[in-house]
Image (tube, rainbow, N blue to C red; front, side, top):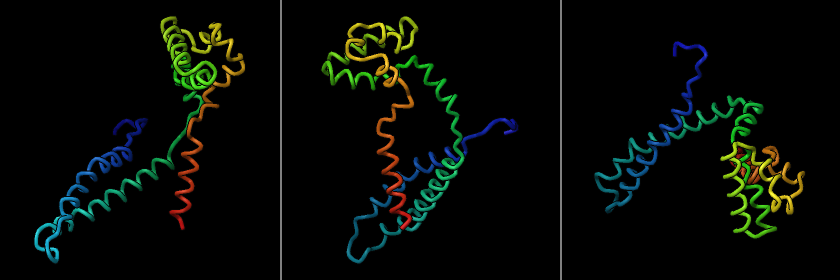
Length: 174
């Protein structure tokens, strides 16, 4: 690009391109699987170009994934601003899970759905709408609401995924 400020996601494009092509190439290998006596003429020749191409594409995709991961820049303040644009709605599930344990799933779901709709209609933060709802405040303290609606505390399964990825990486390095 002639624009010096522009950063094209070339690595991502390469990775996506490879991910798009490899399944089709794998289907060629599957089609070549049936073999007659002593691998007769025809099918196995389809593997000659296909398998090396798959290996090259996967290798290139992995390299691009590494470059992408090493070059990631995290702007935590920007991420927080983007989350705040959702009016807290993106964290409604965390509240719903806790309320479901106390009120039952259907009641909690209906209550959160109503509060979320109100937050959108009134252009208010979900935290404020929940804090004004007597059914919610009867079950959750202000501190609990603050904790549940703080993105820093809502990691979901991230710890499990990271631990699994690290364990697989350690095993792969051996």
